Length: 475
Length: 148
Image (cartoon, rainbow over all chains, first blue to last red):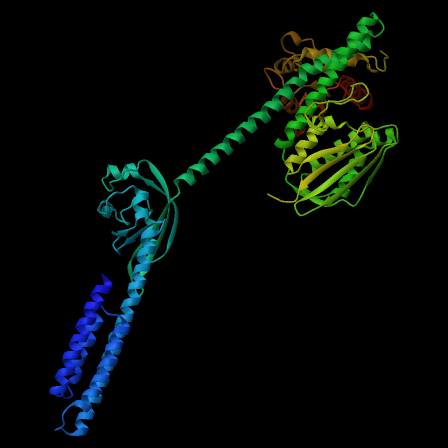
């Protein structure tokens, strides 16, 4: 134990100090007395602390001077004083040198302990390598990472003989460049096969390695520090994610193609049905009996509805498949176009459309126009007894714009507030309120594509306010 | 049929869908100008007709060709190219009449010197109007080259 050896040292030091003093008393030492007094100093420096050394030095000094007074005369006073002073001087020089060496040694030991702790206790695998590439030292984390039980097994692996690191990288390392080498593919099976490593790990691991050269004060390479982390699980997650995304993209493309082909190929037979029933209606209306007229009408209307359904389905499927790049859209200018597109409907119903200062947003222009058009067209279509008044406004916060389309129409009962956004859901009869029921489903999809949400506040016969948000956060 | 001309205008309709053929016939029946609609069902027959081959040896040269693009045997685009590269046939106006709305089809047709490109409307009444427009424009407004 440290303190035991310290006390032994000090015991020895004080003992020798006492002996030297007695010698000095009876046989006064000449100028060579410093030789004798430095013995306790050196003794105390073996395992003692700095303060022990200084204490001995102080006591020695007192004794040296004391010896001057106690010693018997016979010699020239000046010589004696001169000898004592030299003695003291040399004693203190030695003391200081010894204590300096001690403090350097102590600092070194603290440093050494710190380094060892950092090295051993690090959760990151670390290796010290000599200038030839041979492994000198490894820590526990390294052993665990590489599945090594005994330290000596790994010493066969050389940095410069590692097949997993490219020769360009090794060249850079030799020239003293630090390397941050991601994703080294480490093949355990290969290494085991070539008897380079004895490990219980199998297969391939992905490692993140950082190799740093170690220099001496002359900038010469004294070795390398290699730090390594096992990122295999992170890599696996990445690869699974990539595959999932790729699968989804393929699936999406197939669905798009399917939707397009289905609606495209359905058009032709539909055209035949529609056209010939209409031709029948035209050519034979009134010439067959009333039943025939009714039957023909039902057939014609059925065909028309189917055509509309197919068109709507195509539009719906294209919202995510036909992607236009986002641009800055001035909603005020957009509204001018929307009103122009709906001019026939607006004129026929005498509707009044007003809008407050609308913002400039970052969005898909075609889709936002479709969104406004659907909402306003609905507001006009589902009007009440009064002249339709439709007001569009917008507020915003840090993360989104919140638009509202307010009307004074027939309103919607609260139990239906969720259903209306479902595809092909209708609440009213077909004769008075034409449409397939896809308008709001399209609105919802567009809004969701822009990172927002859509909802309605309304009561029966009290008009409705449709709110939707557009995200400000660009991805 | 009011007769604005003594001799009926000869029209060649190249169309494989019998339903569409009949619709076109019915639509042309309501036309102002006296016309005779001749039908062939695929691209090969079309070229045979135009070259007076086989059973078409007595066929008259059409004054107007209505050509569908997607045809069996020889594709409409090929037929168009052949017609417009033939010294004798190139002066016959060719109206592409097809369901396709694809940009590349439109471009290709005009590049091959089609006289115009008409997309068949899905809705019946619109289809009738389009046929009437074609008939009106190409048979009464426009001057067709005389056959020599």
